[in-house]
Amino acid sequence: MHHDKASLAALIGSRICHDLISPIGAISNGLELVAMGTPDPASPEMTLIQQSCDNAAARIQFFRIAFGSAGDPRLVSADEARRTLANHYGGTRIITEWALDDPASRDTVQFGFLAALCLESALGQGGSIVVAVERDAVLADARGPSILNDADCWSLLETGAGSADQALRPAQVQFAFLRQLCTDAGVTPLVQVSATHAQVVIPLTTA
Image (cartoon, rainbow, N blue to C red; front, top):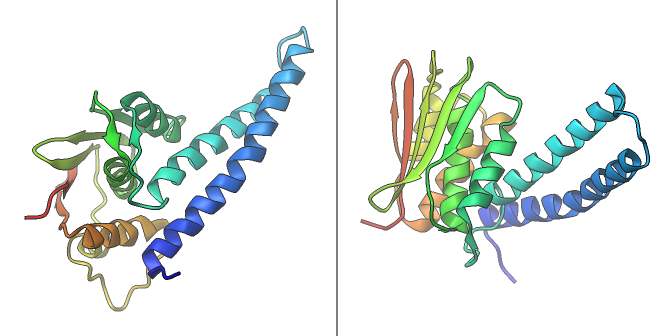
């Protein structure tokens, strides 16, 4: 069996998410049972534990698609994609919209989620992220009071070449992974960045 580095990394991500979601789900179920046996309102401590558990589960569900293996033939419903994206950013200063009403391929959703992660890094003061599919392309659009323009990261995504003097940080891995997925699919992402607006366009078909 042979796997290139990108697909191996995706398989590792899928395995980690798969193995983590079960115990977190079990903790959440246990908290619900405790709450059912307690007539009084939940204590602040129990509420905090439940919120933290829900947040962890939401992030794992999101990362499972964003950093999982590409090429899965199953479709993701619009409700699932919308809910997963919204839950991932719940409690943050970022408002999201999944602007698709039809089911989408898992690869399309993965492109959208990774593009959202890239745009998130530019929204230091919060803002909005809208993901749509228009004219056979994933269109991820971010707006905020101030867009942080990390030229090296955007260059890495658009051309595959970042600064030779700057090492990629863990918080920036989505740029490299999305670029690799685009390269594997034979498409080239397009990026536009201004003071209050950033956009990532990923074609779904080769030219």
